Length: 257
Image 1: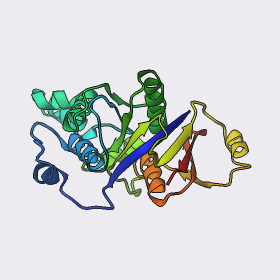
Image 2: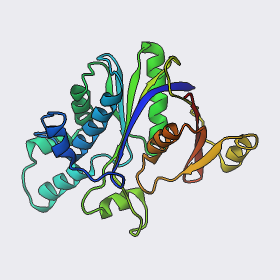
Image 3: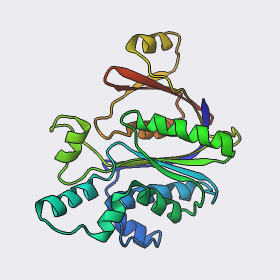
Image 4: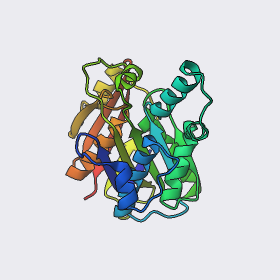
């Protein structure tokens, strides 16, 4: 399977220190009411992409996350089970995964298909597979968002990721506009649906001349989306190998610039 990347955007919390809600309101004149930090982060990344490329109303939209909107889950759990309070209306609405994809699609003018999709593992690659299957039929382009927000305190995020408490975890949102059309593309992604063993991965890489990067999920689970964008920015040809419990997936990136 091959997809062509027309443009991309990235925000990672250790690279920039900004007030996202304030930036959305002041720079983009975006109404942030009734939304939480997870939605704000997703919308901000989408606005960064829209600054760089044309987004059409019939583009498809796919949003994926490693841990989802933990903040609203934690607030809901505390209110209902610990404080015996009624669930707040907008916490209930924001608890629904498709709420985030709805707000993002509305913010950037997408009226076509929009999906919030989370896999138990390999969530970024699995979302690429879903998008590829859909746009092969629809003949449209798609926007892919990979997002993870660290909650406060960050111990909950670390427990969900299964990482040591000393490990640094980050918030990040990474977008790509993808297409089946090679014209004006800046990079090519090649991947498949197969899960490989370590021996099979080694065999795949025997005759590989490109840089290889093992993608850890410790800093945030959708780190692969960020690594792809970084490689595009450097005009690198890369092979990314993602691992989960001795299972592997492979993603190949070719620069077209």
